[in-house]
Image: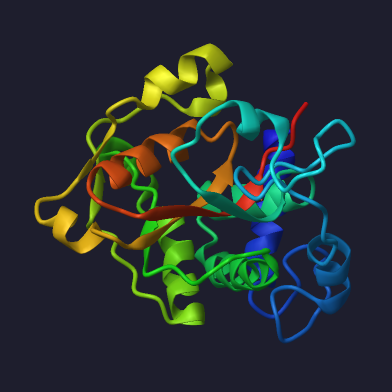
Length: 243
């Protein structure tokens, strides 16, 4: 699996930016029109709050049963696509293959998703999910911040990357059982000094590449609201579908 993935990222790097990042066909953009139509133009009903696909078992509302039963600190979630092949390869190429040329593509696709999100309003500011110091040093960049930079340019909304800090390096959420994920990120984020004055009464959008259970984003939203944010919207490139 890993040798295949790294060979894929090597070919992807060779193709960018003059070839489609998914099919490799030559062209002026890093996503060709056929791939855009196939993977990013299929709108599906999603929960307005958490972004999961709505199924037949969900009530006739805009929110899934889980969100109706449980309080969430965030108010809405905008999703580009499910975290599934081949979209997951793009995420892995950006995060672990250092293919930073993909970040503008992610940002523009997020912009398009925002335009189609029901009841969506432009936020007052963008905040990327911060990395811990060790992970940032190891990776050399924060993929959420790179996406947020592109999105900020695309929608003309300011990026405030220094307003939120991660206090410690947490374990990777996807490696933990569901019942341990909330505790893993509890009190892991702080608003920097003076941040409450900036946040008060504002609609804040939090940017990330992937949303799995939503515990990290929920902890961030709770932290931002404790410091005065009026509304928190998650803007995520990919959402892990339910199993």
